[in-house]
Image (cartoon, rainbow over the protein chains, first blue to last red):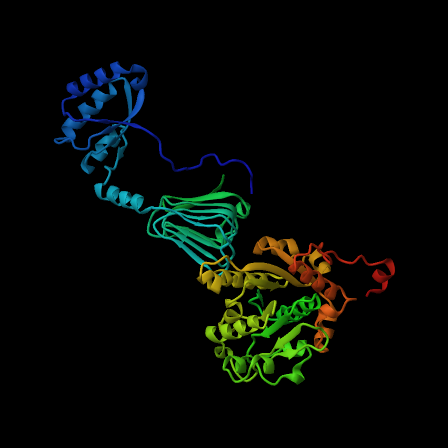
Length: 227
Length: 270
């Protein structure tokens, strides 16, 4: 096995991006309004990458779409993607080199809110969790300030933090929170799982064993990385 | 105030009864009024190790059922003052032990001013073992230097912290102490056995002592003599150290390294 770095690596993450909420079908109106905005803070807006957001704009179709995009392009900002355009327009957007993003599903957002809400106060364990013991932090994080043994089971609706070796099983986000994470001082776990996506000891790369790591979920894939 | 100490391990054959006998005899020899109770109902062994098997009339279950009293049932040790044995029943099973029954006997023993009550637990995590540890103030967890024994000890530690009376009443937790038995320093050096440090690391409880593997243990068991009384043997001395530590004395750990073999010994073996 070569130790050389891979040429590319895919990583998940969030970036802050300004979005431009377009509320008119008139290209000139849009251009004018945008010019005004940029004039107010040229260093901030000038050449900034932005997301064009058409959510809530009615009457957007094949005819009205292109002039609007062009109007933004001709302004001193750098549109990099479009959100809130109906599915029929996606192909046209791609043809214009404007990647379409799916509109934020209202229902999904609500469920997200719910997951956020149920994460309440954490359960803190200061004594070792022994083989055969099961600890469940309902609606919150589980924090263990001691050893956890092989044959123990840590379960949490939220995240799991172990300030000591993690030797048993750790299952977080068991009610579906895929943002939950696992943190431990020394990874020796029999199994780690986030929102039902799991890895057993055998699938954990040996170089990560005994390391201080975090485990998180990205697109249904469990990532384990030292920190 | 009596102290109730359970000698437990989860796994069988690691030396619980040997340890119970030696700890009890050691405490008695130090002048503490001590009784050792065999909780292994149906598989009575402690009387053999203590060499009093021919003097058993009544037993623990008789006492629980009110068929005998303390004076009739306790067997006084002939070698060490201050030492009594409460044998298990051989003809019954573990279900004869109930929380109420065990509590009644322990209260009688406390009233009789016993300073130490040593409970020799059966193997396993079922009724017998749970009854042995239920009323404990302290626990001596006996572990051999191998992974299955360590895991079973870990399991029993979990039960101590969740199923004991102290846990159920939310009192200060049972004091846990680790006693590593059958320790063969030579086999630890060659990697065949876990080291004391490994075991302490895994179980994360304070170490009470390390008893070296020794043929003297089996010999004294067969003769019905607690090994702690064998002052010349390493195992006897190690048990004596453990008893002293139990009483608060500070003693360095001994017998942790392999004996260096001389040239002739290496040449001719043994």
